[in-house]
Length: 533
Image (cartoon, rainbow, N blue to C red; front, side, top):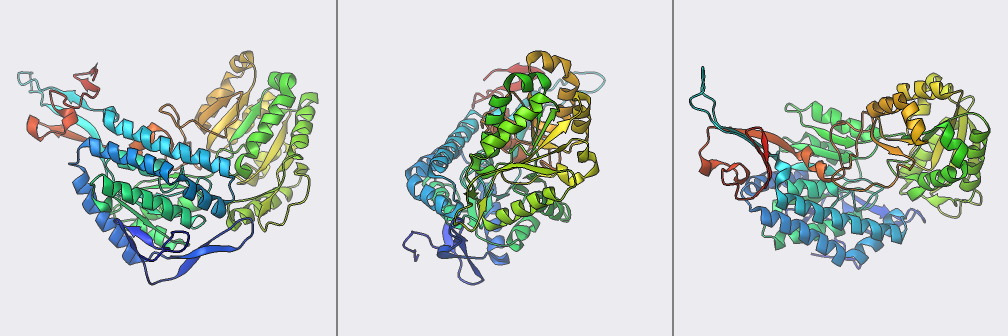
């Protein structure tokens, strides 16, 4: 295959082979300079979509009989090769996203860790939640049959990666490795903002699949700069489930397309979230400076391009409020403007902040000091303030503005704070700053937030999350399409499985996890009692 000096082919990776000759071309862009990067990438068409999903469907049948040690070995190999190719991957990601090198190295480490954690999950097997109820032939008036159930993979998974996490929530991110752990093949729609990074990581996965001796159709990656290929992937009859991280508009379009299929499929989309922060009076009085410093740091993490970015603050008016607002503005002035991930996000940020500025009663209280620099796409931190009563009158104030902007609302009292909370749409997170005594006093606020958010943070900040077994990264609409499921952490595997029940089957025909002698030594529920591995 012909490669550029960067080692990139500009082609799709379908079933272990680089393919793509005709159709349009597009290039990655350096967000700092606005210039196109080397290598033109092929645009996927219907033929590439069909080929990738046909190979994935064939691979799915084979994967159901593959020993679990091969699945685990594959995931471990992906982690090893990501680290082995880390320098090239990180350098390309830096060029395409403008994210700092230290941040990208950290993200690469997280991506490798995720692969290894799902290797361990697959190896352990208890995620399948095997349940056994033995037959009672002599039961009256009717005999009880032997019934056994476990979770099994659903089929080919279509993955749409995120622009803001080009490694951890992209080609080899949680969506992909969780699907592999469930024995599901994956077809990734590469993100047009970092196509070179996508190809480099896709090559790592394809090489790992070949090394593990698994069917090459287990993984494919298609490049595309538009919406057509993605919609074709969702609509294809062999696609079984979709994972998406991105905007509300994009996620909703995919969900609607999937629902309109003759045979609808689920779209697990993680979308828009305002992530409200509630500062109770005791916390504001005792620690306005500390909370303000931590808040501004959280707001500007990754130039505000986190789905958990705190876009709304509510606190009771008074001297503590004024001090907090002043400290926030002082800290924001020290944050230099920076390049965003791509021009589309920059334009959306500019229009979003302009929309906020146009609302009567909303004032710009603070912003980044200093010039915006020579980059074509730079964003300044913007701190708006308003009276909390405006939220009910102007729905746009409750919508996400993706980037380093927030509105700090002055509430008349905690009763108004509670009323605002009741009216908010779903979010990935909600944060409460207060004393332990205030938590008890304002228990009703916490009960409301339990209905509004997937993760509630106490005396901390929502950005940055620990991808562990206990994490839930999801929330009520519009934060996600299905609030029950998480897109990060061990439980992310449950997006790709469904329960299958076996009644009256002989031992030899049952999956290993359901056999009487439990050869895989997994924890099971047997006749209503938890049986340890």
